[in-house]
Image (cartoon, rainbow, N blue to C red; front, side, top):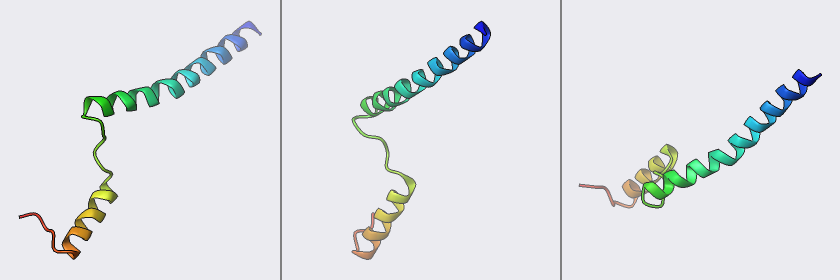
Length: 59
């Protein structure tokens, strides 16, 4: 009985720790990289297609 409570407590602590730590790590990475994360691959591709369509290609 005590072992089950201990395991449940450890697992719930890990879960809460991950739920709190993950957003904090993402926020810190954004701050270190100048306030924003690099755009997602799909967003980069969409921007490149729009730039090509409107003739704003990089030289």
